[in-house]
Image (cartoon, rainbow, N blue to C red; front, side, top):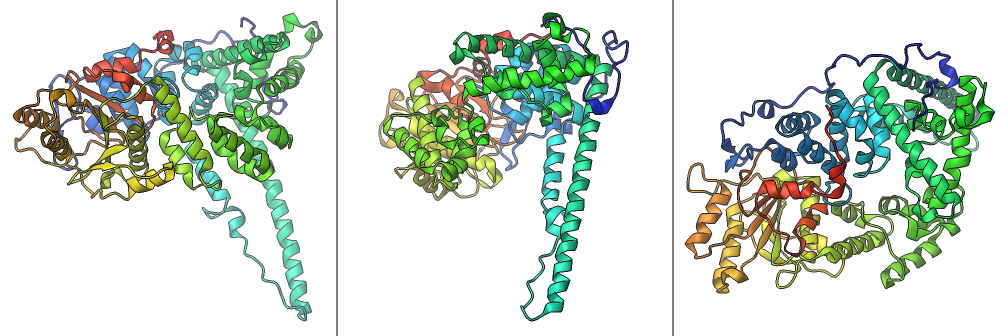
Length: 637
């Protein structure tokens, strides 16, 4: 898009754009509003390799792999504090800027080999804006390929409102619901009086009337406050746009991106090619939506879709009125028809047309979130659709969901029926890409894994057991002081996960004993090198117990020594899969036969299907960021 038009904002601003609006110089460098990494990360001296230390359980470990990019790839997980993420990102960028940029996008990737770590990606993009703004702005098109178009709006919003705005908003919502001391929760229920107590009834009636008036006054006050907040946000976006060259460049690139796609999609729709339209209309902010109020994005997009010079009806129209008219036209002439063509569930839901909703078009996350509504408003059709999915007559989406999210939905109101079907779809999709030959998972559910990491460990462990081929299919190894080879029992996903959770885990982690168990099975079965397990997935936080006899011998070095003593030349390849923010690094960057990966997504498993080899940790990292979408990324500053 080449059209340049001044941003005026909503009428409530009553502001004129500055005359120098489009000729401002780049602002001076500013500090990122994040406190900074921990001292451990900040003080890493990679010139003194190998950096050794102890795990939380006093087992020997490395503090760094020796490669800052690999450290970022392995250590950054969804619970990594933003400050530490930025600290590792700074080291990675200094080591190799292009690789670091690819790793930022790998955090977000919901397809391919990405980690689906949305919050980590937003924190990294925020850092990019303040340190390498041209690189961020000029990669807008490429960034959209890794997540969804809404990411671009969220990045703008966080630049305007601060990196922790979503946490702040969440606290405010909780307070408004009464959990934090405000909202409805502070009103006491008035008890009902007996029929013969007229005086009490009158008092209660008066009390109720006063309460209604108070609530009404509170609602009016809340509306006024919301309006003031909306105007303040618009004011902030207006000021930022005209005072910050870096922000204006990013804003314009994003509006260009949406305008170009919407124009192309409208042409495709009008020429009968509706199956080729993008999802730009789905994620484009609607007029007066929260994103529009905070970023003024609809005005920017509308002016590029309907430029003055191409539409004679706008000649001589005052700028504010022109903005109003094209915003409204964007909604009516572009977004509404494209939404209809996309068959978005929200369109049918808002119109109360439940009996026309095409369930086979519902995306995976939307299906997970809306299934309760489907059952409530269209139970018969929705149940019939689920039966068709079971019989293979219909399909259900699962691509964007993480394994532990599906398992977490097993207890939902539908009895877990949707979750079971989405899990099956996920397994089937992965199986089409290949099998895991001679592989087994080791699931750590020790005390340090409490919370989501433990749920992820169980989910990924069950998934690997289902993707594995015989004789290891349906098996996994418990990660405890006394590891055991277990066959996962149960016919349904719910039964399997319950079995895994109820296994005798113990509350500690002895990594070497896991491989002692594998070695014991091999020796007892008189297995040759060719019959030995080829790969072991270790889902853990890397905080292993002290078990080595030698003072600075890492667990992996000890395993190599023990296998050699028993006559096995090849130790199974090991995929160390980190699930919790931790400083422990099991091996260095050049260790053969080992991979260092992390995160909650199943996507990285695709690298190991059908004999996908492990060479060194760096080789695996580079493979994860080698896809076609990564080749579009460029470093400009």
